[in-house]
Image (tube, rainbow, N blue to C red; front, top):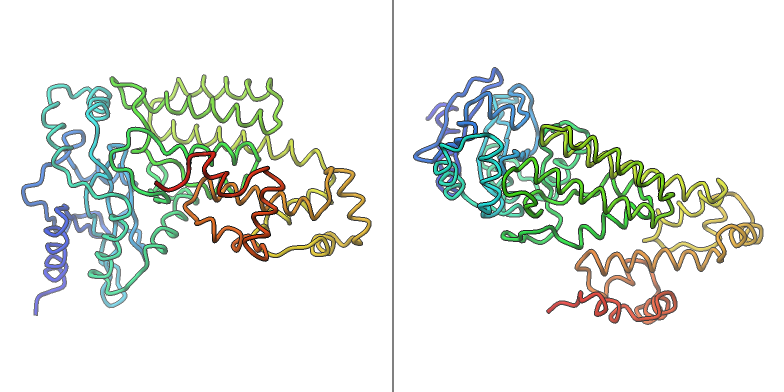
Length: 413
């Protein structure tokens, strides 16, 4: 009967050989118990030295997790962290990786080389990235589920892994390197970001939807373009400047005074130029998006009384439910007739019309930003039938849902 360490090592060999991944087993004290590297190349940018790797992953050896944790370094690498236990005692953490989410473009590799001034090792760095296994994000999630089961004998769903990693990102526990959560179809060799994600983000800012922004998965690093061939940090700054500029325009469209929006933009871009690390750039860009969205939110809220703001928020929050004028009136404890007068005076349309408007806006979002079939959207939004949904959609947009999809060139080929 093999001892526990040998047993773990045998499991890790299977995972390592199946997916061509290196694996390190780290005790809670930080000591490496064993490693399975074979002839795999180490990253010349940081030599895979223990402390360098731990810092890159924001890894705390004595911290235990009850699900696979996926971490990403600013060298484009992905790692899986799995806590191992035996007889309810925490044994340590298996660090599985690195892998790349897609084949890296040479411009991005050159940017890293220039930033870290390791020109003499250019060939080694290029060789490292060309030999590191490529595992797309969705597949890596499944690999993490399989490895977690082999090591812990506990089966966990991909959805749970995604949800729990997202919580880590929202709580700030991952600090330098937020977990990736893939919510879109894979584009392994895409040179630029998904325009649908950009449109969704700008729509959130324009509408001042703070809660949606908090839950919005940022565009994947690998899906952004290269805006500087000489420096990765310069490229990140240029991408952030472009994002802040678009957010500025979206906030103005959402009602923020242009002078206020441009002043905010100038301030953020000036601060951006003084930053030295990827972490600082990412944090500043996130802060800018939040500030623009928050300012738009306040502008929109200030236009209406507290009662009407409560009604509008209730309608939006329950846009996927079957809601009526009476439901809204009960929410603010007003009579049907008095709410009608108050709502029409402040908003300009009836409560029922506003409910329809919110639902149709959501239908447009579903058409633009998701792959939900047109036949399901009406049902999701609690329209009585497809015919009525089409009728209401056309009333508010002037065209049918199908025509709307055709207009934006979104029909499946």
